[in-house]
Amino acid sequence: MFAVTRLCAFAFALALAGCAPPAPARRDPAVRIASVMAFDAARFAGRWQVAASHTAGCAGAEMDWAARPDGFALTGVDCTGAAPAPLAAAARVLGPGARIAAGRAFGGDPVWVLWVDQDYRVAVLGTPSGRWAMIVARPGAARADLVAAARDVLAFNGYDLAALVAQ
Image 1 (cartoon, helix red, strand yellow):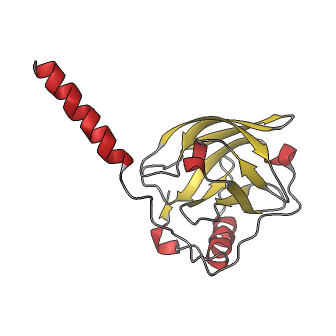
Image 2: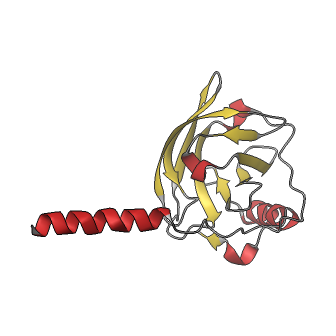
């Protein structure tokens, strides 16, 4: 009987979680947003570490973007929700520019690469809905000047920098 009661309580908690309001927008919707037009998916492929995100607890979280003919195979940690979560998805580049669909990964939002430095060491990922954004860097490549430039890109695109958790 006790196990059934616990099971019912767990099911009820899950049902309530499904009714929770969506994450608040962290971007001013009045500000226009744009993705990188000269995006090279082959150069973007590889391992990235989270340098800053809207999700606490993602310090150094890694994501692997393995190149596929139709886009990427994603593995690692998804740092776009209330807490870090496993990341395992197929993603495809939609265009124009660096607009990526990754199914249910990243909260189901389209992922836009808003900026990447010319050597593909640091990049800014975000979503037009404004639910999340993050700065990612190649392992060992999160130079202070590049991370500062990435923060400027987020501000330019209307993101709330105060809500960004630096890793």
